[in-house]
Amino acid sequence: MAVAIRTSQNVLLEYEPASIGERILAALMDYLVIFGWLILTVFLPTSLGYQINSFYSLFIALPAVFYDLLSEWLLNGRSIGKLAMRIRVVMLDGSPPGIGAYLIRWLFRIIESAAFLGGIVPVITIAANGKGQRLGDIAAGTTVVRLKPAVTLDDVVIKPFTDNYIVQFPDVRLLSDHDIAIVRNVVRQGDQPLFQRTADKVKDVTGIRSDLENREFLLTVINDYQFITTQ
Image: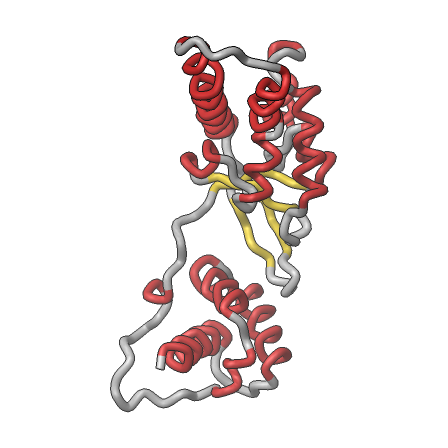
């Protein structure tokens, strides 16, 4: 079941929730990262005869304890395991996750950890929840989704630029790269109602007036923006 997320530009995007298997594999990879850290900082020094004091123990423990929180915060909703599995944390309201959301997710891991009922709580919650959420996701308003392959301009440009290419809508320069990324995604995956809403939003932001059919208008906006920003 797809998860519908409405962006701040009032564009509705659909994502596939990460499967239980993908999330488990990502977690196992993260555990390997933590285990590698412990080998490097505990087993290796101990085998060489170094004594571990309380200060050094704290140095060892903090990165392991806060790994999930710091990695998701610093890597934009992804840990190393999530990067490998091409999944990430997103907010259901379309806003970028903040440190507060990541903190809530991290705190709930205490309840959902393998030490609590054998780790069955998150598995049951994700399986029963239609949006792929564990308890921490529900509390934080997040979910974990699959990342689609990056959308390039080549996916939606209908013809190569020629030397005499004429920009139809110079005011597309009022849009940002982020705006154009959303437009590209809509053209690639959307339907007629979504084309209409996106075209109306672009016209509202830029002041452009056009009688082109909505999808053709959006393609022209993409082409004009690419041409203007690459010259």
